[in-house]
Amino acid sequence: MSQYKIIFTGPVGAGKTTAINAISDVPPIKTDAAASDMTKNRKASTTVAMDYGVMNLTGGEKIHLYGTPGQERFDFMWDILTVGGIGLILLIDNTRADPFQDMKFFLDAFGKFINDTSVAIGVTQMDLSCKPTIDDYHIQLQSFGLKPPVFAVDAREKNDVSLLVQALLYSLDPGLVG
Amino acid sequence: MMKKGANAPFRIALYGMDSRASKNMEMYLKGPCHGAAVVVGENEADIDLIDADYAKAKDILEARRTANPSRPIILMSLQQLQIDNTFFIKKPVTVTQMAEILAKIKASTASRQKIPDDEKPTTPLPKPATVKTVEQSSPKMPPKVAIDVYAKKATDVKHIDEQERQKTAKHQSAMQLNEGGFTAFLGTVSNIDFEDSAQLLTASYDPRQAYLGYVQSAYKTAKQQARVLQLNSIWKSLLIFPESQEIWLDADDKQLRAFAGITLNKGTASNMALTLANTALTVNRALDKFQDIDAFMWKLAIWTSKGRFPMGLDIQRPVFLKRWPNFTRLVITPDALRMAALLVEAPRTPLEVATVLNVKPQYVFVFISACHTLGLLGQIEPQETPVATPEQTTQAKTPKNKGLLSKILGKLRGA
View: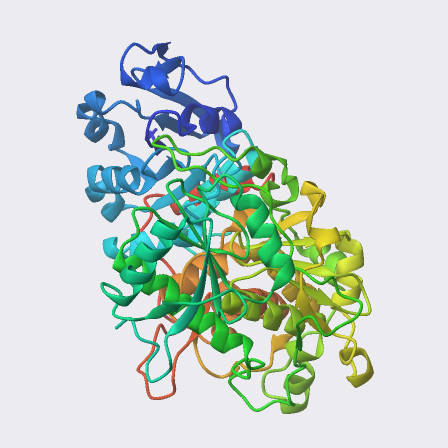
């Protein structure tokens, strides 16, 4: 049976682990470790390999949910991780100093994968920092020639994460019926 | 560049500055700013300029607002300030900053001097339910503009707004309606025969004869004037905060839905007025009653539409989405995500959307109404070459396993 997966990526602290946890049918396998570098300023522990969750589907099929490690030094893993990926969920932390720079970095890093599949962007922590706005993100995205879904997301809310993934799937095929 | 076109320069009164600083500012406006403004006494001024780093700047601000609430106020500070109904210049002052602020004030002043008449829809309609801008003439209204008490300091680390977190309605997750929920939520409208012009006519609605039209008009005015305004009606007062793109309303959704569905006649419309915000309402307002302006307008649009098509859009011409709506914070009508994906991809007529996705026209109409209200919808001009045909595949990129994707959707949607 083929291994289909959805990739969750984004900077440290954007909520990748939490988002996978929100929709996974099994407790996600986490590979967090105490943060000892620059990430320490943002969270006590961080994902050093990858997060993994599963959604069990009818007929015994599964969809695998992979979260990339947020630290750039693990970016060599990203190409391997995307093989067999259906699409990309990019989470951006709105409280970071320059969220647009973060978005650009990940859109560039996953450019080929996005071109082959699709991307949906979730902006987290908007309840702590409401600017930039969702409109601001769309304006920035014009320079990439992309019109992806961009939603405000609370990664703890299953409904938010679910809608983001649904939008990703409809971007691939609006004719899909769930 | 800095001049007010053919007009005289702005007359500015200075506050919180000693004689030396005042003289410097006077020379700065005359020299580097090419005489864009001249310094005058407070009684003759068009604009008040306050040095917000002065110890008693807050008192001065309040005093100036009380003395002349309609006069624009510029604050200068070393710290980044964000205070409602003021313009801000960060020190050190630059010519560019000064020019931009004066241009903003000029535009804002111009818009205040006339009732906006550019709110007309794209097709001829009855005269809009104009919202009057009432300044201090109304005896019922408070004599001064509300003062928003918080100020944000600029820091290297991004500011965390604790108040923002308490605005729970703004950050509430979306309500997703299925078909049954839709009917209960909006009421029923029978299927429409697109060949029957009589039915087509009854399937449309005029936003400007509903509360929606007044709110749209009021928000536009608040944005143009860059200040907090209050829409008064026979119902509850609505506060509009253009800077933060929020509204404040002391009513629940059930009450709002009921008022949204009412067609407003001339008598009702005459009770509508747009005024400066009531201080009593803006200070100590309950944070949980703030709503994001887009989420509010979206709801208002679907409750006004009830599955009907908005007048002002040509039903025969293809429409497209400029961008995806922020669905996680909106009420999601049936098949809205599918329609968004389709209309972001290529323009289609509403009928094509209904056919291609096999959805009811009411669902298409209500979605289009909501997107149109938020300015997310574009329409192809007749001479422009369209567009996707109904026969074209709806697939943006060939998915690897359509069956699997449908299963994932079913799982996510709780099927």
